[in-house]
Image (cartoon, rainbow, N blue to C red; front, side, top):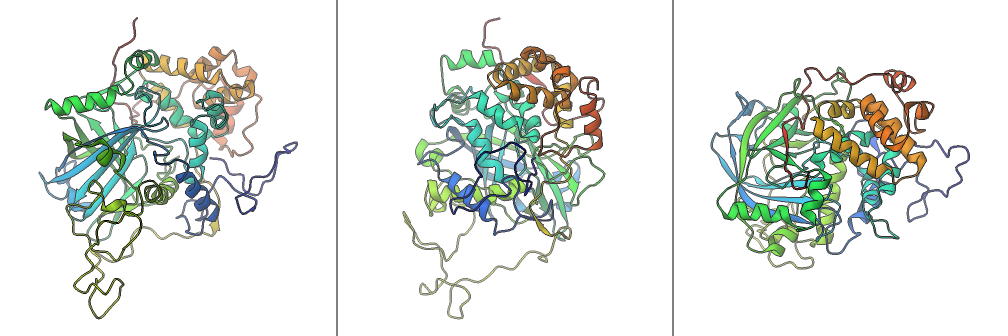
Amino acid sequence: MTDVASQGAAQGDDRRVLTNRQGHPVFDNQNQRTVGARGPATLENYQFLEKISHFDRERIPERVVHARGAVAYGYFEATGKWGDEPIENYTRAKIFAEAGKRTDLAIRFSTVIGGRDSSEAARDPRGFAIKFYTEDGNWDLVGNNLGVFFIRDAIKFPDVIHALKPDPVTFRQEPARIFDFMSQTPEAMHMLVNLFSPRGIPANYRTQQGFGVNTYKWVNAEGVTHLVKYHWIPKAGVKSLTEADAAAIQAQDLGHASKDLYEHIEAGDYPEWELRVQIMSDDEHPELNFDPLDDTKVWPENEFPPKPVGKMVLNRNVSNHFLENEQISFGTGVLVDGLDFSDDKMLVGRTFSYSDTQRYRVGPNYLQLPVNQAKNAHVATNQQGGPMAYGIDDVGENPHVNYEPSITGGLREAQYPTHDEQGPEIRGRLTRKRIPRTNDYEQAGQRYQLMEQWEKDDLVTNLVANIGQATREVQERMVWHFYMCDDELGERVGQGLGISADDVRGLPPLQSQTLSDEELQRAANLGKNGPRDVEGLQMTHCVPDEREVHAAA
């Protein structure tokens, strides 16, 4: 990610200074304020909170992102183990505790950028958001079909979505705008290699993977914590579309994926996914060349194997689209006992933004709606009033007491399951900095080399077609980035754009970049580094990908 705090303008840059709406100059629009470079975010992040709060309210009443979606119901069935080990070694969450234990759930699949009536065959990440109705309250696992994201700090979320959304003047999605932003955001390379491959257009919702994307924590009964990542593997296998296949579908139907999901469930052919979890000890892992809290990275599966903990089965469709699809509301902060947050900077920002968005879009009492209620847990709060309130939560035996503490009735605090302190000790000064280990290119290049040939070919075709609409300066910078990822990828995209390694070898790193010694050497030898070595490497998205053919040969 960029790290330009207090650097000032480059020589010759006479653009106007970015401010907030109070007129305050924004000295760092790239990093939230945290305790140390990789520590937890602080609540007084005024610039971030103002920026994300305004972004959350940019659309009425349609979702700003994930507007088009399909909801289904089903259950999660636990194995009681992580692989072959008792799961209580790692988490005390009741949802995972017993073999055969079933938990009700709702899932919403969605596209991210398009509007509510947009095509489901668009090149776009797919939302993969699940609401588990557990006896300890709701747990929302809000992820995507791709295992990484464009950015690693939530302060950039409005910017990346604005770049991907239609131009505010022409109201067309413009590749020139998208790659203008991406060319200045090297951490996005891993996501771009995934998104512009066939996996950026799943054939349908049933045959796509799902990922938590962010790093979370599990907490066991002794308060011991581990970092975890979630993977959903479809029983039906993974199927994807080329750009031509998607165009053929879109010419006939804008909602093919919702139709497919609905019809399979109605026919009793219930979609199923296995949930696999990667586990890592809860520390900084200096032995790795990436930060395990970085959502632009995956954890190599040969080092951190994902092991099964249960399965999800979808067996019921909605009875009313508006009540159960438009009004269902998710949030990454919705966790139950035994599950916890990591200091992933994207996760911290999402946790504020999602719930804030729901209060604006659906209303402050959105959790009283049936689809959002904690229907398998008892709810007792002192939250009252607000627009569209249609009930009062349990306030205890004395209706006059809607506060806590009290000696005349009301509600009391619960007993915490274990001691309140957990996780590693964090030390650091308040700062706005990127994480130290960025390593923005290696996994993108490895991912390319692990693709099947038809995926590589489609990726290159799509990148050339879209980057070719940007300015020459942006094209050259993107070719430079792709050479930094992998020589073959850079060469093939460059050939399509008429740009060679010699044309871009002299480009300096971005002002915002601090390259490692290895990356500096790679830049000096641009185009002469050879392919990335992926022997023995297992990465997310390496399950076989079948092309679902719709286009004429």
